Image (cartoon, rainbow, N blue to C red; front, side):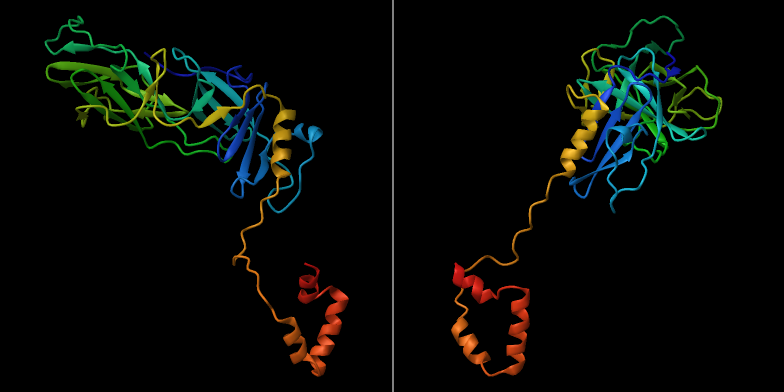
Length: 328
């Protein structure tokens, strides 16, 4: 089964369109290849419109201060659906005409995930050379071949680094097999590779082409997968979607802001957040009722010309501490 993205589209899929929020940022995906990224800086107390379309300025002018630059970065997006898996795309962010990068994204229960595996049906055969599937592998539920992707850690405007290795998993009733795919300059081939265990031959795709990079699990033109690691049980936490096509490995990266999908709402969220005032820090010392003995202090200061000149200048700026204390 070949899972290569086909036909990039500049129209944002309806499932992805809207405002998505995380602890450190807000991502807005507009109708036609628009993207805005709002960074929650200064421990979340300031929302920086670091990346946005130019027409955002017609809705709300940018605030100029030390935390943000004069103009936001304007990026474009395209979306490529990966066939065979529901709600799975490669999101490509175009920095300019020559620079772009892609990120696999999956949507499940109004949440965007970046780290996941996809289910690809394969089979096991006896090693006697028979091409018949005498003892088909149980491909239902958790069992089967789960392929990794060239996943990213975040959606950002500054590019991404390709993964050096992609880890896929073949899960059977006989054991759990870890398969490593590494970066390669080889031309992508729609061909298979295999490994064996206990007279069973397990077949998977030789290459993975993901987010613009090709990966392989064999050396050269070989079809024999080596250095397969076997585990007695699955060594990580996961969650499988209801349709059984996605295995989610991490918490969701972004959560959709319900019933709020337009640019005006996004900029209102930013405005409201930036109008907040951070509470004053707690006092260094706890408040106490002290007797400053002002009469004694005034008595000691009497006759000292330098102090009397100082007190005279102080009155021009405001009341002394003793004047405030008397009003209490």
